[in-house]
Length: 371
Image 1 (cartoon, rainbow, N blue to C red):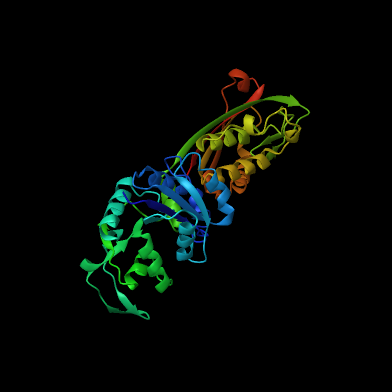
Image 2: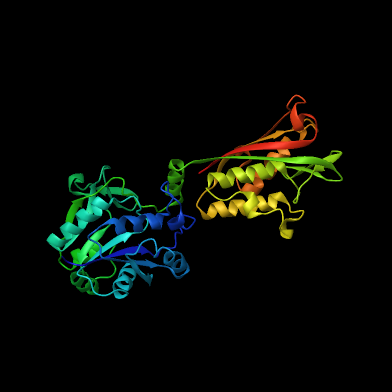
């Protein structure tokens, strides 16, 4: 059986995405890069995998080695795609074939990878293609010039499989092509067209990531309670409320923000605030809870999530909260980095029942949608 080196190209800057798209978390719980690596690893025809990436991402890629034993080589990205592929080939022992895949195509199926490799064995070069649905126009300036026959057009995907020696020979003749298939075409090689998958999309822009977010929505709930005590400021949702008592706690005891933080962390599958900001740590003595909320937002953004919307309910008998609602919404939206319309704050009493009704303390609930 011929040997196959899987090369995952992950050397882009993600500039059009506005964030590191390869670390965006998918509904599977894996990042974009890890999902592509998982699919390649699952194919029994791939012997080894090389990930080609930027210097600042190498440490992250290295953490994936233990989980994916086929990931044996990590190589630096080149100035061009073809330079990156060459670096991947050079980083590993010689293999008969290379299977080049864009890291930003995480939805490829293992079945498709296998089908392309099998056709690569048969024809020396193969790539997945899907029919073009829209009518394509060739333009000259701002005007349409001609219309090619749509039946002859295909959109090319990855993985693309080539006999290694043929690829290197072709690359020496042409390194300014649009894709690896064109390199082979210019050198006179024929590339077999395997039926691709409509779901094998490439994540490129911020809009692509937004669409992913719509598919991967997370709901979180948070609850907190603090006792009222004399000699303390009353701070709710980052706003000072004039009152004879304040909430007792290690930090500023902003019960509403604490509930909101736990809701956000819960939606993202992260530990709660008691774990992140323990009440026996002097660093958080008197801490501004809105500053801690900013840290929480930074943590969930590392996992690729943003706040879709938040609904906070403050439960207290006194004082009257309604005059401060708009200031609270504005403050929370500012800290969370979203429009004020995405944050709702409301207050309710418990008709003088329980510890909140008797004025002993204040409680808060928060529900969030993360996307």
